[in-house]
Image (cartoon, helix red, strand yellow):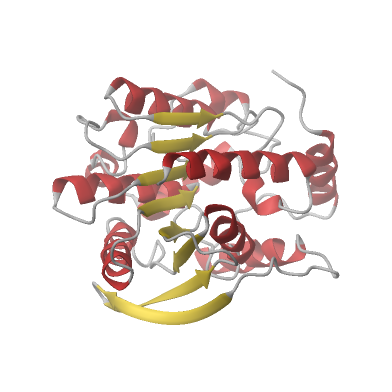
Length: 308
């Protein structure tokens, strides 16, 4: 494999030295607090958010009541809409942790971005987060009619985005122009080689991922749902064109690669961007690691190419 990006090596060494790893810290609440602290600390004391035209916190109708969303308007609006689902293992993450990513997506795609604060496991296991994602997708389409619509997410959010695309196809949901899947988790069996190869020492660990799945989908029937076990979903035909982004030193690398190939085999147009030298979560290191910045821009340029 290409060597680990030296800037990421320095980041990982610093996180290890300060006791910031592993990610999972006992309870879900403790892990959320720790993850949020890490996300905010990455920005540094001189952090300045990427400018956008406007940011507004709203609530839309969700399946369990008001569903918080954050709406970003880009500096140059090219008439698109992105429904964005944050990562965090279905357990952690929120609108604030992924604010820099949503700003980048809005400006790079020239799109209004609707970021979704979906319910989290274990208090709300599968399918509650996916139900929220599906509802938000419908509300975005209704609020911004006529715009090419992208469902997007990173990590667990990418899994929810892919599941929401399947539901939209099967249940008469919004017509989607594309899906952006950034290092998605698609195989709850965690049986692929990269889980063993990259399962320790690269930020997200195999133990972390197993714990996240235990919170989100503790029952076998939940893990067998095609919107969770995406890699073995029986039919991927008719899904929207996809940009699938993976990272070389990610436990989830192989299942992301394999999902891209399954989409392509089903006749779905796919742009697959591997991440040489990069780790899981690299989209969250914008402005910190040059390689993460560069690859994120390439991924968003690939999305731009797919859209009218």
